[in-house]
Length: 329
Image (tube, rainbow, N blue to C red; front, side, top):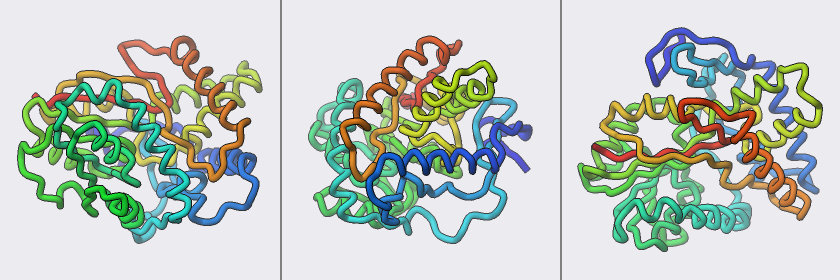
């Protein structure tokens, strides 16, 4: 029985069948193979062709609010993100790219909190944002269920709690900011996380949420089904989604600006700002010059699309990924 975690609606339409998602996954695999020069080891496939949400599923759209929901055909296998295995050498190679990406977010985020802010990052992964936050003068703590990734972050002297936010026993009203950069779309019960975030934040505390944009994915599917779309334009959209880990939409939920605000505001938050974004980095084991150049061209092309074909009404964000920040009222 479908039940939308945002609006509680019980009606949905089919956006992508399991077969269609599988076909996109094959496109994704081919895209990656064309950009590597050696067979990928299992650890190298992580977040390239191997995702937590790779199970057979249909992708549904809530009729009432537009949220995308991945509807599994079978129960997921035993285990969760905590069992994800990462190769140490691969992490060492990718870490500078993540650090560079977060450093580039100094504007607008650094000015949103005081110089000595106490912040929590949910889904801290390798710790690149925690290190960036420390460089900004903030006291940062990470929370992540991943044991391998958290072990790496701790090896760099970063404060990381392994587990879920609700189990960390942070004091009420003790935090200036809560950042959920890249995992909100994977959380089965987002309401419980938002409730806990509201509890531990000070009054006027900052909540930042970053997710893949379900609206962008939906608009791409609409365009790709248009028989008048040229092969060149179709290939561009596919590559744009591939460079941003959107092909086959390997996420539990596909939020938009509207659905995030609808979900988050009732927990005592007021929207303060938003921006279009993109994947932090595609974790390819190698990045030849032609891939870097192509990715730059794709980014420029998407920027043009956001202001034209993909432009939507009512203040919606049409980027590949979106970032919104809220204040606790």
